[in-house]
Length: 352
Image 1 (cartoon, rainbow, N blue to C red):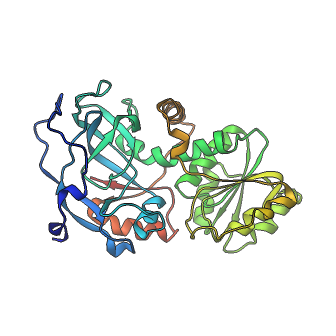
Image 2: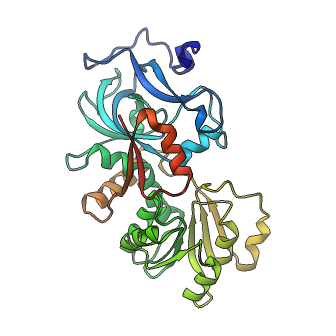
């Protein structure tokens, strides 16, 4: 197998554990696990499914036996090299499962706790997780729901509450409105009282976006986005545009953002936005922000705030999760192919 040429310490470079005391541990933890990783950047053919050692906890971390891991565009960016990561690298940024081992300094978690978390190396049966990036699950939230809503839900929530504080009556354009983040944005924006214009590629996606809160739909494969937005807004444009697509939608997003409006770019589904001159913002005094989730939740206080608000929205049924498909871990390459095709709707999950 391909992994035989890789020294395990290439994956796990934690500090020495000679003095590490494991407080509690399930007795059934194996020595190796299945995972999906890359040794070099490139296409889906670079994904390797193989056995590697189960990671060891550090003083302040927990070992989680994953039940589900989320598939996100950022995983494809890291695989392709658009976002550089040290190699070899286990992919994945979110997961949900049960705690099977804790480090000596861990006070707030115990073996058997059900958790959801953000971090690295989630395309694996087990993940070593910093306690600062984990949250306990209540009994009414399943592992599936937690893995499906965590990264995309927190992304959507911080977009509408921090990147641009959406107000009742705002007119908002959401690109890829039937995608994982797009559907959650539509639901949150409806809850906040905004008027939502969503762009999608097909009639099927249009129906789904409407069901999740979009007031107006633009099928960009049949209609001109700029013309339709201008018609819907009497030529005024949108208070804010949320753009996860990138290169293909940049010019239209810029054109339909109204005077004194905000353009929030948060993805590269079609490729990164080419270099721009800030002078393009001047004619309408526009605000431009390029976001990612993790600076919004950099402190434990911030993470707790947004996790709490997200789980409250979920428990009150203000938001609901749309699962596109479950994939076995060994089929991660197909999940990457599907999400990059931009033909999926909602959330893609790996099931362990």
